Image 1: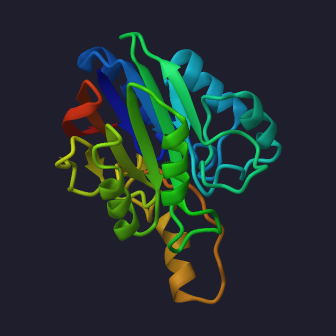
Image 2: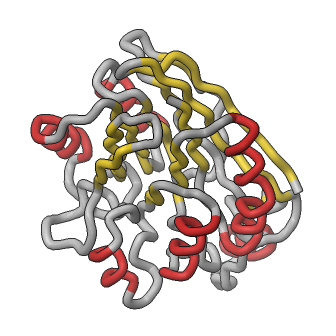
Length: 256
């Protein structure tokens, strides 16, 4: 099976990159399944129903994961509750709208379980992601398991990779917006990368205009964050599986 995972899509520039490159990547790589982290798709914070529906209906995205900005857009909770392919972190407290995982059948006839987790180090309060995934995997079965680990700390993302080695086909990191050079196969057959990197403007500070970010470090006044525009790059990983395990993982980059 051929799986394409895109890192955090940031604002309108990130959406433009998706529209420009995703259809071509799907054809070129003969992709069977597409997972995109969309928590920054709407003006850099959150996602809207319109954006999600466009990705599902027109760009061939199968699952959208999120993270700490999942509910930034007003009233999006109702859409989470009725759209199972849009995931919030599975380790959010009980009663949170929506779900943290989904099982889907692919065109290849396999059933894939996609899980969204959020780390706890330097992140908003949430339940333990390690115990959450253990509990989930005790109850749910599928041919393949893919986990988006939305974490600030590289150590926590790496620990999750080792924790799930041999149990998940892939553990891919999101959230920091900075691509890491450690895409690899773990000994148990799990494809792993600490952070895919964002799909958006790299002439920035993690997608936001650098002037606003600098002002927050250099003065007491907090300038308003706005999505940057320069150096647009799409970052993704392409994973091939065989049986329940991964056989390869490769980084992909496209530019506008």
